[in-house]
Length: 114
Image 1: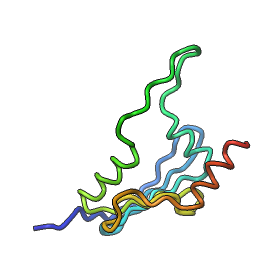
Image 2: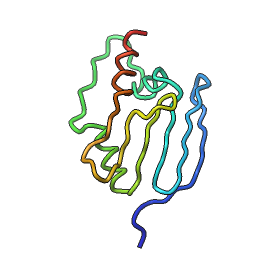
Image 3: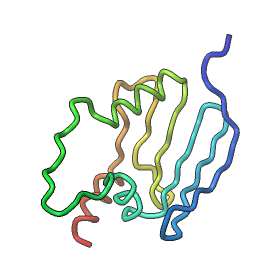
Image 4: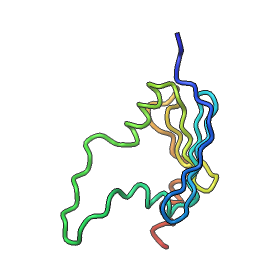
């Protein structure tokens, strides 16, 4: 019986605006590379809201934790990189939550000043 999902692939997705998202996988390790913090912010911002629309309520379950739990269930490790630097690692078997790096924190803080 298989212990987890095994993948071997390389995929480049072109996001609107000409931004290339790169996904590489080997065995149970996946790497998703986003070209910049601006593109990551655009991807994670959700659909646009009409002016004056109320802000949606915060989800009761953290989406990052859900992704981490799903990766652990499938036996995968997902490494999210921005500009080639690791930001968050999901699915590590010895951790109960995603591993967020200092690069991610500094990148998010820096994006507020642009």
